Length: 223
Image 1: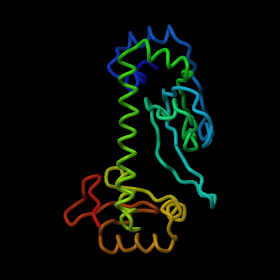
Image 2: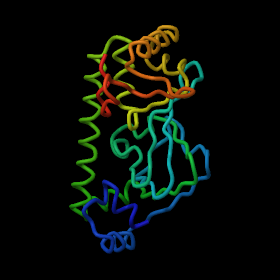
Image 3: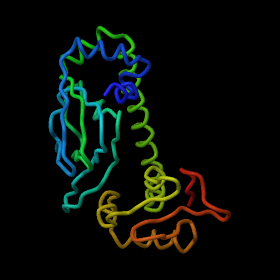
């Protein structure tokens, strides 16, 4: 547990022995989850600090058509919904599911507030975390305003989702709904990118990003 906490943004730059002493002075709980267990739903209250100690969590959104869109995966040492711990609306923005057996450290909001007041480094870490999330959101909003075509939206999405130049489209219809476009239109864009040798289909729903000489670096997919 100490190793996972030390690698988290909240307890960054704090030694393991100091983290151990801090935990001895506060109230906390370790929550366990089974594989594929639904941990929380969009709109549920974020009641405090949640830090993943073990396992991988999937954040998802359910569209109006009933399709599930995977937003991102959270892994060991990640903090869950840090921007929603405080403020007037403490509601989880996505559904949360355990992909595998998971353990999460939970510190109730008032207890966490006491910790922030008593530990300057933790306070600085948490403020940096919130600021970084805000800056990232601002960048995403700006990119959305400047990526108006379907192709640009798709390329921006792939850039964020790819891993080592590869990405998976689990549900094209759900992705089209997420973009606010028709499925045939998105399918046409995908086919054009394959035809233009921008991407290559390497398996069912799996693609690789290409360039003329080898594979591009992550984030370099161009139209």
